[in-house]
Length: 193
Image (cartoon, rainbow, N blue to C red; front, side, top):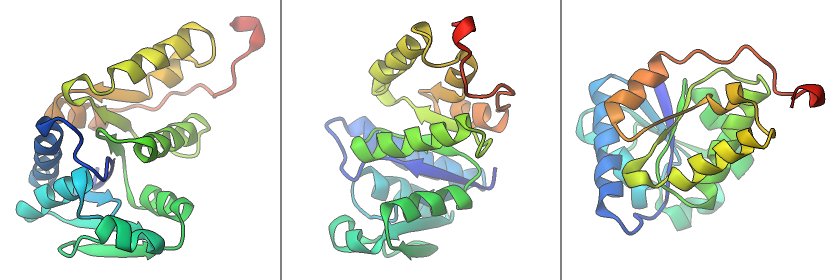
């Protein structure tokens, strides 16, 4: 993996560990010679992960919609800042640039980005590893909901397993490097539910 896209909040949240782990993720990526692709802002967890990688001499590529430049405040120290027209173009560009995805704590935008990448993988549009750094159990309720989706026959177990989860950065990166995409298609046969 040469580049990883990180989706995360544009605020810090209520727990200091979110920020410290975002910084640690950035540092670890730099130490493993993996470039960061992210939303391009210098605020919140987005800024923290970029600061982490840059502090270790790593490369950070930001992708920022022009209309958010004044709200999310473009990071001035990036290796490269790519301005795009829309949120859809942002996600498409981030997908084109990366070899895998990690989600940190975040809000609606983070979840939307994570699920779009999962959906694209489920439909066979890419075979990249998609992961959650489950800091302090932030994603536990979501993981439980995904299990419910599987238990209720709305998601194949093979597709459930596409989502890699760990609360440890090194372990998560190892899982991503060893990821093998499912060989089954998305569609569930109603006779086999």
